[in-house]
Image 1 (cartoon, rainbow over the protein chains, first blue to last red):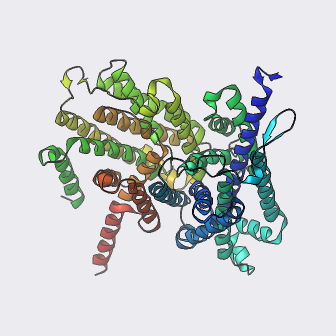
Image 2: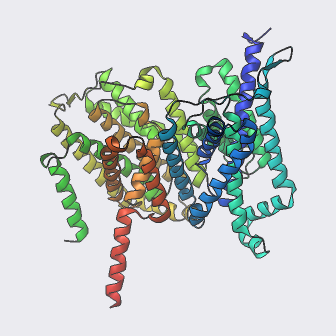
Amino acid sequence: MDIFGIPIQAFLGQLLLGLVNGSFYAMLSLGLAVIFGLLGIVNFAHGALYMIGAYVAYVALETFGISYWWSLLLSPLVVGALGVVIERTLLKHLYRIDPIYGLLLTFGLALIAEGVFREYFGVSGQQVPVPELLQGATNLGFMVLPNYRAWVVFASLTVCLGTWYLIERTRLGAYLRAGTENPALVQAFGINVPVMVTLTYGGGAALAAFAGVLAAPIIQVTPLMGSNLIIVVFAVVVIGGMGSILGSILTGLALGLIEGLTKVFYPEASNIVVFVIMAIVLMIRPAGLFGKEK
Amino acid sequence: MSPARIAWIAGLLLLAAAPFVGLYPVFMMKALCFAIFACAFNLLLGFTGLLSFGHAAYFGMAAYVTGWMVRSAGLTPELGVLVGMLAAAGTGLLVGLIAIRRQGIYFAMITLAMAQMVYFVFLQAPFTGGEDGLQGVPRGKLFGLLSLADDRVLYYVVLAVFVAVFLFIVRVVHSPYGQVLKAIRENEPRAISLGYDVDRFKLLAFVLSSALAGLAGSLKTLVLGFATLSDAHWSLSGEVILMTLLGGLSTFAGPVIGAFTIIGLQNFLADRVGSWINVIIGVIFVVCVVAFRRGFVGELLAWRERRAARSKGN
């Protein structure tokens, strides 16, 4: 059976690949949006944190024999702690000045991280094996579904929806949202806003690391994997607008799917399709699909 | 004469004498190209308040177009540079039209994303030579007469272009148009309420800046004889920001000093530290943003102001 002259197996395979990429876009743009909301900083280092997350999993396995499953927990903790240190030592100096400095500082951090990892691991990619439990594929009748890919989509959706629940439905999330609107007032009500800010950055970093561990078995782990991804995620964030959590998740997934479809029908354009969509969205709805007009 | 004027004349004399005091002309030309690039960038960030995070796109666009025109279409160098500049300005116009629809940090993200798109086009387009780049671009004869093959001849051509660009930017900033740009930088809503069509001013500044960035890229291709993907890579967009910031944002001499510092540093460290150079660039970035936001020239001006205020107090 064919769809528009493409075998359905290949078609669905690319679609699934798009969904996997979309899950990464969703997780990373979610973290960017939460950090931007409270700190007013566009975190260029998000890609580097994602990359470090993947390397923690690699080193944990190769050097210490720590399994993938423990890395899924360990790596976000390590990178989250790194995020806390970054926020406490560097970012906190920048809250009163133009937000472009936050972007520039985190850009510098990304360069440092990439340079250091390139020095120790080289530019060629490292492989992390798929954990035993998830090896192989399931035949669904109409397509063969690689188990690990299914797990990536499932795990990232769970984490995204969990983050959504935490921010939109819990008391802590309410503080966080209030802090985004008016930090001075929240502080006046006796909430420790600086701690909240620190934990938010740490949480965003942990989310990026989690995405990095999930990605490690299906891509080449390289020092540059983060920066190449983060620019696409920036475009995703511009398309979705940073106003809504669910909006970020939906936009991320949808753009992954569209990218997958482009790979099927016009592979040459698959690298740029997200940017083209960004340009079109900006012409029609400058605030982004889910953003609020100011 | 004021100390500032003495400094200008001294700087110019130093640049004019550079090939005779043992400074390697190719290095000096490369630094001058990046000085033009940083000045063009400063026109946008320093004097209009727009952070473009994708200026390598225009640099790279012109570098490739000029390279192709001179090597494959047989154009003379000045025509090649002109076509390269036009291509960069055209790209800047397209990106600018899209990017000025958002302000502040979104503007930076949009320009970065659009530049990445340009990069991918270069990666795949048939005429760029992919990963190898466009190699073996001849320098040719200026106006069909003056051979640029000699490094010293080309050096003075590049220096003349640099001085022209520098004076042009000083002129633009001090013109009524430049004053409106400053007003937009300081307070955009107020500029709007005064009746200025802010978007048109911003767009023109963006196109001007990308055309001059293109000029820098075109000259770089002539000087080094090749255009590669790294001319359009986002890390170059970051480097030009760093040059401007390190030298002194919103000052005229700052970007020039910043460009010479960074290019000199890269040149000096390249054989000594290998890939640690990126780490060093990153550290300078972080230090600049946290503790040195005024840059060399900005700090110098602030120091002079403090001293003047103190002597007035006495």
